Image (tube, rainbow over all chains, first blue to last red):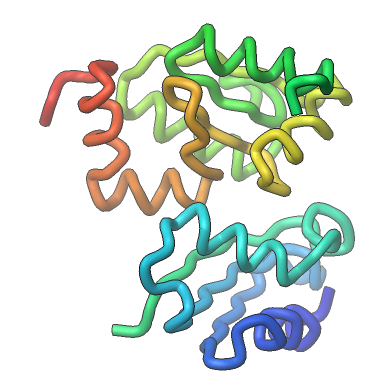
Length: 75
Length: 111
């Protein structure tokens, strides 16, 4: 799954977010993502990551094999 | 959700073991880098934990995702509560929060 697609799906759900994607392998399939959004404020880490997974829908574990994910609020 | 037989099995597992890691492979032979990271964190903390190899049980492999509302493996449970996947385990470990959680539950000595 291309980085631009992943970023677009996340930004559709979190318009204010900054999304940094780093390829973990040269296969468009293993990504490291860091998502920073004001909307995460007050949410637990589990809730933050659930929200990102929800934005990615059923692609997670399917066309998007591996996503190393960290989330944070802006500092 | 308790009328789902797979969810009932998972519920029994997480409620009858203090620490449970649902993973791909075994602690000796993890079959995925994320699962490997999760086992290394738990081993570094020196805790006893139950592991469930989801590759050996397709029903649990699918069922754990809806049970936890979490789409990926590994998944860590402590005292029946979902803690997170490997990224959250790593973040909590680096912040000392995982050690604190386990200490609060009486599973490791307080730091």
